[in-house]
Image (cartoon, rainbow, N blue to C red):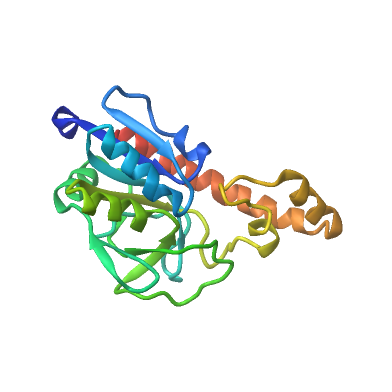
Length: 217
């Protein structure tokens, strides 16, 4: 890849299972860090002399017309206060050329501090999705004069929302509290149908994000 010749690439993903999607390459360092922890993870990568940071992984759609498995490469990343940081136009265009198998949306992304169980209003212009890491990674990049880009694939959309019982079963590191989740399903067995629908959505979006990772990294 052209951009790899210029130095190390640092990639931040939210979850360990997203980290496994990235192909191994000597020019790439990948760290998983959930939510606000991604800021510290990004700074650690910068100390390892990466010259480009990417926030990579899944996102939640907050618009009815943006569905599961759609790809977003935003121009701006907003935080909860409506402040924003811009992504690298050069690297965005490079990624778009490599991802030729599916249309790419340019809606902006807002970083939130918790899993959204329903569509909520967020501050920012043309925001189409939310995640929990990108603004923190972008902030670290901006503070250290490092280029930054964001590539996200929609997992949950308006048709399939992450239910509250599931979000309550996720700890501060983004890991499933398995016994708590099992308990929640035992209490209301019909919840297993919601998990089944989500698993189908996840499989679809994982196929897309895996294909993207092979194309750009």
